[in-house]
Length: 192
Image (cartoon, rainbow, N blue to C red):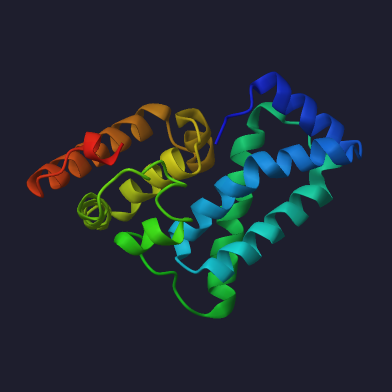
């Protein structure tokens, strides 16, 4: 998924807020797959992820005309998504399943969606098992960075934490993934 340059994103947000349907379609096309992937990784329920993704874009459409903080749009989108997921899980009176395991990779549209189309089934199983070893905060930063494609600054804005904290958490998570994979005889390069 290609990241929109900041200038293009700001233009699209302004135009979509003014009612430009083409700009709105481009915004949805750029963000919907990332929002869906993030939600799916968090809740592991494709129907719920799809439902919440739609609700996220309804919320954005309702508020876009008055949106002014153009530099934080990416963070805003993912904050809405995470808030909607949290609210929906509470509303349904159940807990989202912990992410991890090979099911995450399968649910996210298959391995080709994540760039793993050439990876062996053994490597994918090892990656799923390695993801399951991360704690919730580590898994979340990996999902936000690699599934949602968010920048470190956007993740920091989303969580209200310093960028350095998130960089350190991401570094630790990737080191754990690398070590767990290597113990399985797999390297990160085997997944590319």
